[in-house]
Length: 309
Ligand SMILES: C[S@@+](CC[C@H](N)C(=O)[O-])C[C@H]1O[C@@H](n2cnc3c(N)ncnc32)[C@H](O)[C@@H]1O
Image 1 (cartoon, rainbow, N blue to C red):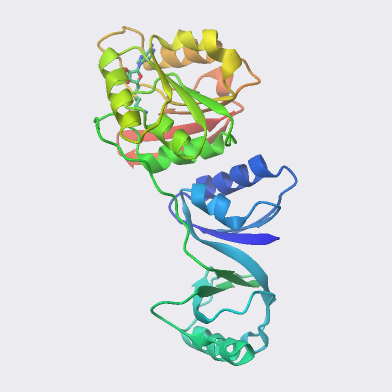
Image 2 (cartoon, protein in one colour):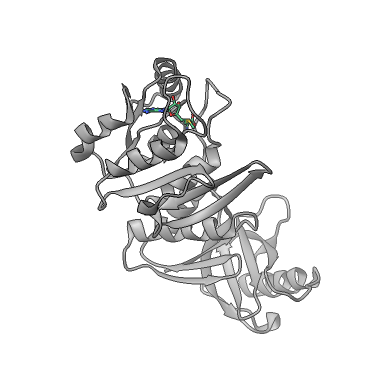
């Protein structure tokens, strides 16, 4: 069973690796083909399970086949009552709208189905790339449903990035994640919304209260511990991975520089534990020199780095 995921242009590498990580976490034998802005996954995982989690997937569905010439399109897919054709041009060529019309007419005749632009039962995708053209289809547009955030704070991480980081950890339902710098709980909220249990730690009592309110607002029950990050050593046996967003400056409650904090933090994490963290560019330390890194530009004085190890 093959599925496709068209990813956003903005964070293309991150988006692609997010889909690969989710697919492999459910089926280690998943075969992945990567093309510019397109990921094809051949695995036992239903496409909607991946699309439901993946933050940066713009379109997703099943692959019905490939085609060279639109007049000969044919693919294995259930006959829909109504459908619409949509071209996704990922190639360097320019493609006119006649392709959709041509494909629509051919498929309507073959299936005896009607084209419906306003309320189609199935969307048929004509995915054009420089190497191959894929015929895809989906009965619905599946996108992640983000949890609610009742209490916000200026230093919170954005919801999408938090979800993507949880996905890069390779954790899934039944696993437990820890965010030892949980702040308002964004990472915990995203983890629990995907069925991953989570434990948050923050040395600031007020942040712990905010996290608890945000969890309660979604009827989530992640544990929140008001303590320094070192507390993680006492719960290491309970957790499968760590996903966290490190402080960006020196907090009023600690005199430790962000770089020293990063070093101290990494020194308490066993090497075999999955670790996904985001920190301000420039804090790189030797212990994570081999980690896979993604840069996220925010503004001229802030570029963040997501490191996965
Ligand atoms: C960048 S913020 C995390 C923001 C969070 N991701 C969110 O979305 O709200 C870093 C958090 O680390 C906490 N913190 C700083 N030093 C700490 C330490 N030594 N141990 C535990 N928490 C600490 C701060 O109180 C702050 O809430």
